[in-house]
Image (cartoon, rainbow, N blue to C red):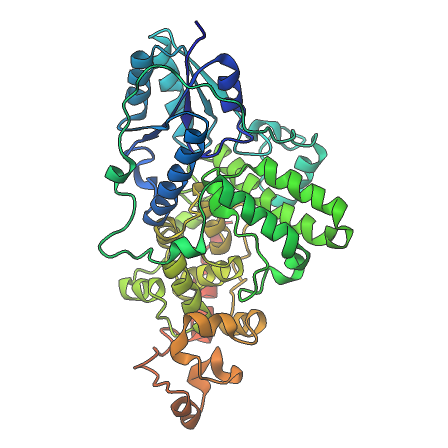
Length: 479
């Protein structure tokens, strides 16, 4: 009788290009399981928007497994106890999984290994969520990279990632295994349903990921190099939520993009830029693996002494898109209404929080964690620290995005801003990104009453910039 294996799905909710699942399938019958551990990660438990994506990803995975004659087993509770109990119940000999790199993952996997081993059950981990294992990319001195460009060069000097694996042929276990009901987990918002309409915007799951990748490579990648900074245009891939939940693997993305370079030589530069953004994701996990305190502590220890302000009202104004700076407000409203924000605008709103309002980058990190569908602990922490100036390869402290200039440069025609800040849509382009400079008759004609229908700026740009430079200059004495 062939051995029964458990495949433990984590942030790898797909069937194709999953080395651990392929190995489990070769060994014999497979019990696929997903564990919802409410305490895993402590403060970094999955955020509200991400729960929506998780629900629909699990629905998609359950359907694909059912097509192959397998049931996705859902269990909740402490991970080690749940998997150990399932192994005993099913008489499984091995638990297979993809390796993870979050700060708590190594300890969890070690504890699980010991618990299973005490019951005569093995644990086998496989790569599957990165292009390169963090230990395999290092400086000439064997230390972790702290700057992206040499890191990505080192990655590209390595052998190409293996070709993606097809979905394996799976054999169901004959035993009857009880499963919890997905609906009972209450991952979807109900009162109110703030995710109303998201089903029209997103298709979580493996099929949706492949469709998004194909749409991008077939129709938009040629404009990515220059167009990726224009938030009103569909020039970005929007693959980040699919990568976050493993609906698609980075190897699948990498090889598909490489193939497009051969088929579309005119788009080589744009494709290389897109691949470097996949590389940024790798870099963030490289940093997280080697510096696991990054989500909670400033990477540059000097920033532990930074004089952050504490103004709850300004924080709420930023969160609600009521700062009086249209490009900032547009981004924050896009985030709330869609679970996503264009990358250029992410940098603008993050710079505004940390350098105009002088609010701690951790406040922004936490808000994004709860509101983003693609909330990824490595990318979120790394990117917030980059903008705030405290991270690895960080943006210089004196680089303070001017939200007026950013809006005028990257949303020149105003399509993005007018979509998300409709109360000022009637303003002419000249004043759209600085409505406080519009003459009274122009405001009146557009139906705008500053301080009533749309807020006045909560800070003056010039004054805020000078205050930020002064605050950041206090760190120089620590050099």
